[in-house]
Image 1: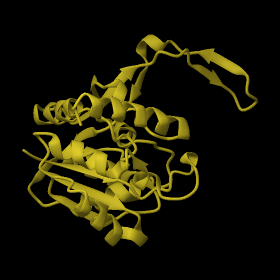
Image 2 (image 1 turned 45 degrees about the vertical axis):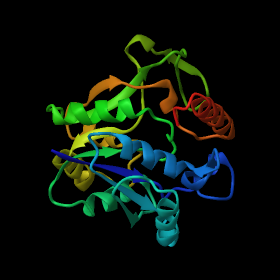
Image 3 (image 1 turned 120 degrees about the vertical axis):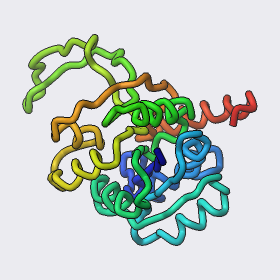
Image 4 (image 1 turned 90 degrees about the vertical axis):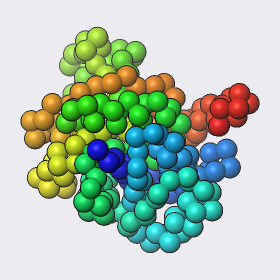
Length: 233
C-alpha cells in the first residue's frame, strides 16, 4: 500500500505574529516546513510528500525545499484559502496508486518519525482513520457565551489530537467531497467523523506540539538545540 503525506502550508499563522507565513518561519535557521517534510521523508512507510503552498509563492516553496534537500519525492501545489481547500488540492494531485494518506501540520515540525510510522502502519493494518493523541492533563471547563462555566469535563476520556493523521484515501476523499467548506472543522479527522467512520487513536508524542504562538517557537528552538547536541538531528 503506497502512502503519501500531505502538508497544508498555505496559511499565514497570524497568532505567531506578522510577517513570513508560519510554515516558512525559521526554526534553528531552517524553515519549519523543511523540518516537517524531512521527518515525513525519514518515515519508512511514506512514499511521497505533497505540500500545499501559498498560491502566490509556489515556486519559492519549491526552491526552499530543493535548497534544503528535503530528502524525499516532494510535490508542491497551490494551496487554498482554507485548510480544507489546501488538503483537497493536494489530494487531487496524488497518483492513482496511492491508497493511504497522511495529513500533517507544517507547524508540528518536531514530530518523532516513530509517530509518523505508527499512524501509517495502523492505516495499512486496516484502520480507516487514525490520529495520534495525548491524554489531556489540564482541567477543561466548558463555558457559555457570557464566560460562565457550564461544566467541568471528565479529562479521563479526553485526548489532545496531533498530526500526522492517517486515512484510507477513499475515506478522506469522500469526507472532503461531502464536507461543508465553511464548516468549523479544525482537522481532517473531524470531517471524517461526520461521515460516520470510526477514527482510531494511537499514542502521540510531547514533541509533536504545534507551534502557534511565539512561546511555542521558543520551546521548539530549545527542543531542536537539545536534539542537535545529542546528535539526533
